Length: 85
Image (cartoon, rainbow, N blue to C red; front, side, top):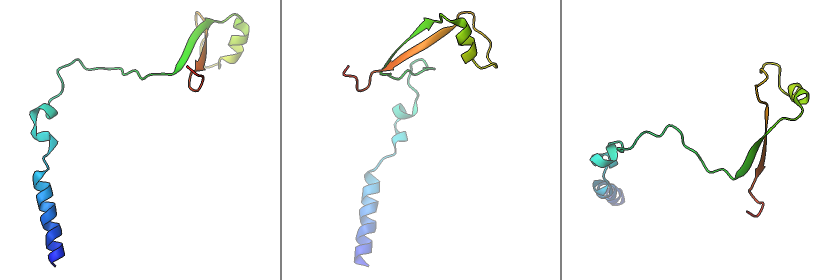
């Protein structure tokens, strides 16, 4: 019984010193900065776009549900992870 009372006393003392983070007005209020709509993450890649040279081959590769773009481009990318950069 005494051990149980010590445990209860311990928790009462611990929780009396713990405060809720929302007590402070600073934490509750939103920062006075413009809302950021897009967040960009770092990307360890290099990529570039090239104009397609063989349009007939490009048309074969594009699924029929897509229309042919005015300026067909091809994306080429290389990941840098583990390449010594």
